[in-house]
Length: 451
Image 1 (cartoon, one colour):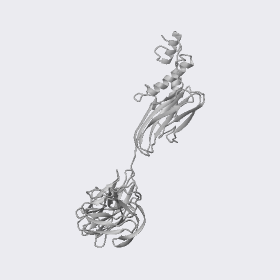
Image 2 (spheres, rainbow, N blue to C red):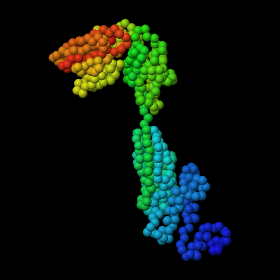
Image 3 (cartoon, rainbow, N blue to C red):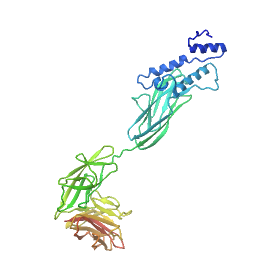
Image 4 (cartoon, rainbow, N blue to C red):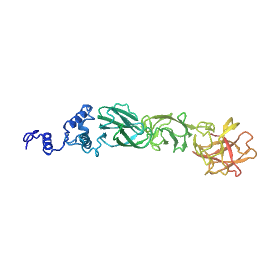
């Protein structure tokens, strides 16, 4: 039957509910005005198309039925009205913050990049009547009330009338180091229920390494000497080698690539003309790049290489295994003997030379451990300047290509370094130098080859 608030078949649902409440003599909650105001408050700030009623309150399919966030807001309005009428006061707490979501998974991002997610936040029944909402985020997350920022680890938003109207909340993930990052973004009123967003994200790093760490040719079998400081590589090839189509074996930093004049280089596969210096561009994963210049020189009579342990490219502290300027050290690591030495003068490849650093060879060396391996490209003389590590006793070194060992006696360390000469007659390969003395070590001061 129609009542004072409705007419027959008027479909005035609000009026009908009021009539039922009157007939049953029970209180009623009229959400018409409050929910209308709520939806309009969303739309008032939704010009950007982000925080509006369609985005957060209503189901996308029909814009009528409520999403979980919209239902929560309507329920909180109902609870607020009930408390205001003295209904279930001890069981309801309508004051606090409501968020459009409680989880934010940012997935995987690269270091020094960023990813954003947007939420809507609303506050009802806040106390005191006027105050601030404090939003905090764990590192490396930051927050802002605007897409334009500023983004900081903590933001305060003022409210009045005991309510925070629907407002945007932007959460940004901006890591500066690799790792897995999680935590809680907290939206807290001065009193009442706080809102929490559980955030998670993974950051992966991008390498900036861009070096050529080893360089050689297979035919001829020669190894390049890399000067990392100058970004140059010098290769000495046997006399008569054709330089117009050599294939290089290149070892690069992890995740780096190399090109020559824009053409990709494949180690052990791409031929190039080395009749003139060739420039490699090495590019890191992060896009940065550096150039290396490779110069191939033919070994003609009188040419060769001189190695001093004070040269750039050799360790300046204790001996360590590795390949330094093309010379391989293996089994020479020392925890106690520094490679530095007081200045000494001696002869190397027939030239008076001042030595300011040394390299210690351990006792009981061989062609499998405790040696230096000198690269050679053909018949030549190999020169070694050295001394016994003992100040009183001479000791022996061996110089050999692995088939014809020659033993040389080095005097006690009180004198200047003594030069030993070995004649090599083979093709591209290596010549080993080691201390085969059983009593103690030997110290080398310089190496040289002359073709």
